[in-house]
Length: 327
Ligand code: SF4
Ligand code: MG
Image (cartoon, rainbow, N blue to C red; front, side, top):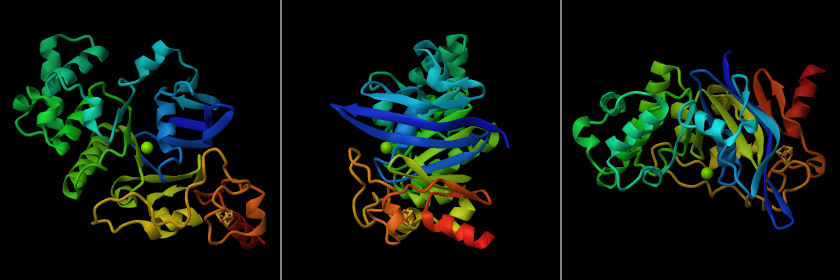
């Protein structure tokens, strides 16, 4: 085991008037070198806020109120603005769902990749251009010299996402955060992009934190899975254990509501009840308002995240089962 990033009891809160929204409420997990970790949950569960916390992109009215994010020996929550900029893009980079929002429409894609290389490396323009073209080849872009000269809007969605991946790779990052990078793409292109990301991790031992609400995508790409609900981790396991034996009632509900893997991706809407309002998170287990197995104590006492053979679950049912197995 070779952890690259270690998140310990992270608390990222947002403030709205006199209300506090604990978007990330005591989250801990790690990412090993060369590992693809999927962070799964419905929108609003805290998965994107977790990734923005890692990238040092939480601004007022948000604030990291507790915990640590260790990257090697550096605590990313304590960096100055300047240090954050040195980490971002170079050590840790991000791929968004919509590359058009991240690419500048007035510059050619080649120019943007080249500039990005030169921010992180002291090399000549000529060398940076050669490297940019190499990156376009690496991400599987046909006619890279031609695409180099294209503007982002003239490319297809899949090509743009490949360009975005080339940009993300241009600083030789150790960790890529991919926030729903394939959600806007059709299934064939999605499969190609997932394959590309897997090849990159295999070739370069890059790690990926892959944020998604789509379990089909998780099955394709992840080594390990972290399920979040209402700002907390509710289950964590390697991908085989999670798919074989999902333990948390919320994870089970995700599986039941998940569209078939070959269907067009949809938001998860089939789970009974709504995500609790961020202003009024329920007492006790945060899932109790929607859980079909809810018991008396679930409503008042929050279960801890407990481990059994490397499989972590936050549910009183699992805790009770584990106890009765022991005795
Ligand atoms: Fe359901 Fe209770 Fe488990 Fe929460 S602790 S998931 S309410 S059974
Ligand atoms: Mg999001």
